Image (cartoon, rainbow, N blue to C red; front, side, top):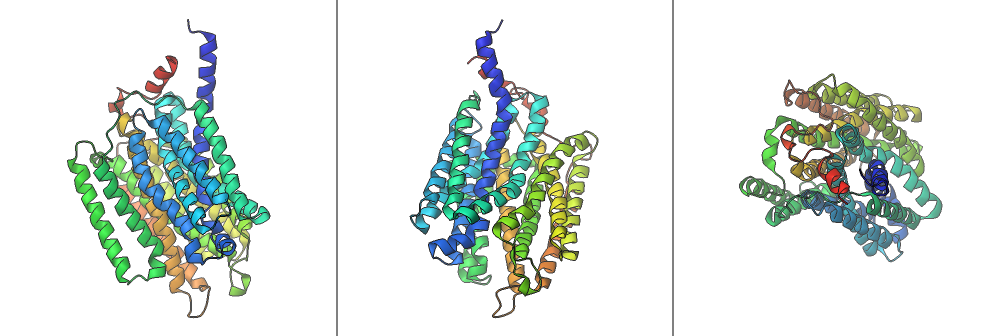
Length: 492
């Protein structure tokens, strides 16, 4: 019979595990929300141009894209717990650095350290798969996937209101407080790392992927400033594509790849990755358009001249709806195929951008648009992790989820750049604001993205497979859900 003095603390830690893992996802959202809405404030406070202040957003995404695959691979073995705690320490340090009034260089350095937090969600999902029994891990994985999406609408108004009321640096001190709380909770609750052989890090693969992604994301972020026909932009894009092509060749040939691309032969994994890229693009196209539209002064003939805090409140329905979608998806997943679930999510998202294209004259209309969009995007993002978790071996979960997360980041960046480029093309010479037709054109492009998304998700998935919501892979019996970490916990 088990000693009650040992059993009760272990049970308490397992009950607290899902809230702690969710807090990691919310931390990612807070880190993200300290970027885009505060760029104008950073430019004013630090006395730099908007282009220089934009690096407070760009550098976080660059670092996140580079380190996420590495963290995912390291987190697939006995180093998972140290990797998570180390990333939290880095995020806390970055928030403190950014909160100190030491100039733009210190702030950007702090934001770079915060970029390590963007790699936490895949490790949280891998932890949920290993440490929880199946009946708890399935809804937990779905919830973790939409946490970062939901957190966008929660983080923006909170950090925006704090910065607006108490100053720029108060927003970063808030981020530091959230990071410290997450670090303490994780140190107490996280289970021991899986007892697997330590994966050997594919250093050449990490360098090729990291450099290629960094170059591609840098090109996307600087395209508007440099000019789409500039020689350095073209050189950077070509060089980045070549590096990524070399990375693919290397990963297919090496015995211990950073990301096992052979897993994409499974059409379910391929569908999840394509969905991450395209849905991320469509999501950020709309988010970028709405946030800019709401803040545009009424003198332009459209817009509402809203503050950063009010703009964040417009995104709040997006968060609430995405959480609601996460509750609905498991019910539908028992009765419908992956193709049906993803196609329905794409159709709902299509309805949202179509509504924005046709009706945006009243603020309440944008609240409706963001509610519908949150439901559609949350629907798809709740399904994707289960598709991957149910199709890859347990020891590949962290790596596979990290790659999926990177594709989301690439989609986010592409959507943001496309919205800015289209609006710039509809801005008259000498004017600082685009015409209303620019928003309609960008929204129609987003409609095209979602139509393509619906077609792809209808074609790729195997017809016989049900929608996966964190169902363990049949071939992963050697490391079942809730088995490995639970056994380790029982011996502690």
